[in-house]
Amino acid sequence: MNSESKQLIAGLKLYLTYLKGLGITELPLSKKQGQISYEPELSDGTEVIAESTSLDQTQVSLLANQTLEEIRKELGDCQRCKLFKTRRSLVFGEGNEKAKLMIIGEGPGFDEDLQGRPFVGKAGQLLTKILQSIGLQRETVYITNVIKCRPPQNRNPQPDEIETCYPFLLKQIGAIEPKVICALGTFAAQTLLRTDAKITSLRGKVYPLSGIQIFPTYHPAYLLRNPDRKREVWEDMKRIAKALADNRS
Ligand code: SF4
View (cartoon, rainbow, N blue to C red):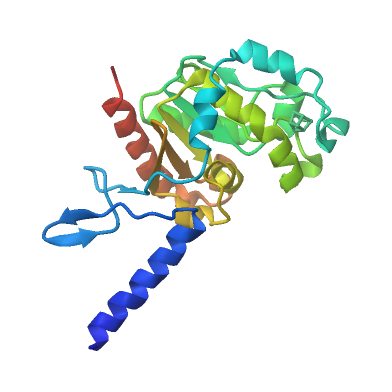
């Protein structure tokens, strides 16, 4: 075996390990220019990751039988995880109940906890601008978070808190039935895609699931600290705009 073949096999092994990490156990093979391609692409070149075991495919449709109002009522004065002890507000989410685009962040911060609304602080203002950059007004999308209560001192959400709150996020997705989900930041992307992979490796690709296209990208709060990453978010937003345009009916 020559060194080129060895390199190819080593690269393929790495890629298969990466896919396995995402929970993908089957490969969609497609012929491309006479070769077998393991990386299907959208027409704009965006890599499409094969439908994976992320959100349970049946869960979203099974959970589509509740309205947002009913889900909020069910949450009530939620004390299902320890975050209830320190929160001021339970931040459920807001926006268009029939939105084609759902924005899912990590959890409420100081301003959100104070006002009871998602993405209203500096990161929220940046999100509004990012949406406007692709011609979307904030009111036309639905915005929520993986967890609905602010962790003390804005610490990272803990696994038990995420898993306790996650069923309500799934119900919200089921109620809204968006065409596209933008997962903002590590925790939203990892929760929805059921992976430990870093946001840097997850973003820039699309993860189809039961008719929903999931696009992970950087959280606006991260962008405020790392403005040099804005370019990548802009690329992701263009992909989202295209997916929305393709889904316009
Ligand atoms: S984070 Fe979710 S599960 Fe925990 S108390 Fe708040 S609403 Fe309930």
